Length: 218
Image (cartoon, rainbow, N blue to C red; front, side, top):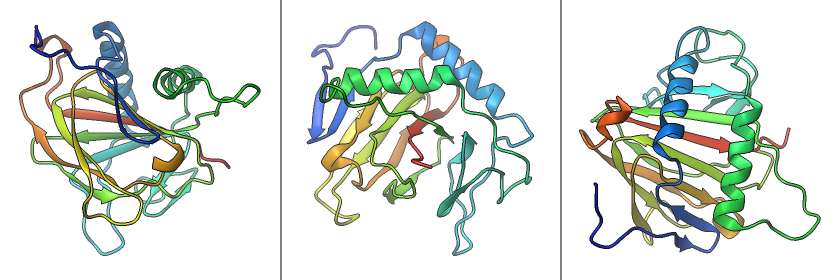
């Protein structure tokens, strides 16, 4: 959208959960998209995630640093081609640390900055969804960083006790940042809808990419 009637501003959706619109400029979005396309290639490339109950996730995924599978982490793609997980680049860790500083502030004096070492890159086509879940497989309570590229989605951010209400629906567009930590770190969240055809034309992406950065604590 070229002009907003009411410009989108930084919003605290819940204590510890902050939405920062347009955090990535157009050039950085293109750079991140190019990196995602490289990461998606085999080996250890984009895969369909299968759940323990025999179902499959509609969003496809590739991991960096540590390979996530339901419900744990490994150094190889244990539920795919078995190859070593792709490395987590230093520049992506710095991007995660900057995202936390911009969204949540610098933190108490002397507190070390979290060393991000996991990326989960999820690709959503027009029909993909993500059910309500918690990011609870890490041994760290460092904030989760979520970056959006491509199509706009409805991001449903809930509570720590249940997958049901209360929750807040947030519109995440290409370039938006969402960070959740502190009392919101284990809140349930999901993506009930993607709006196809809403990606910026100059980005050259059909669908939505979500890059989620986490600290393993391992």
